[in-house]
Length: 144
Image (tube, rainbow, N blue to C red; front, side, top):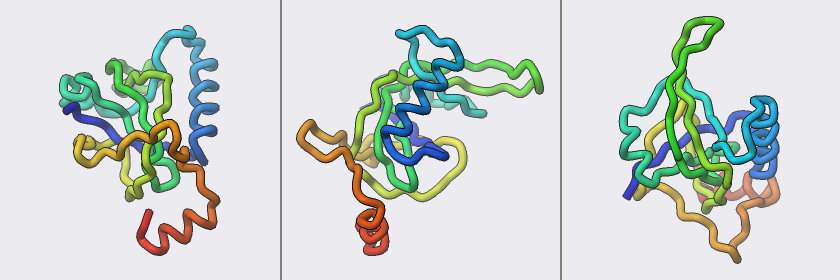
């Protein structure tokens, strides 16, 4: 099984908001309609080969793993303004909802072993959009 990455979606409220923000960023960058979405980060994963063997980038939205995007590549580059190197993570544009799973905050990205990754939601499942009060109560009870 392929290795995955997990990253916080800072400032994102829900999956619809994530889709909107990603579309706007692609428009600002003038990316072609078929190009993958780019996610910028400081460090390049050292286990890139394992990640590109079918791995995904799992997004944590408001403390809960909510979705994933399939990894397609990594590019290293240097910022022209300050000379710092960065990594561009390339992911497919398709956002796949996953079963919600609570996740503590962290910085940057982390590796996510396949056994710890939440399963995808199937067609008939809810997309995980619950009322805020219900989410708060489930978290309080330790169920999310």
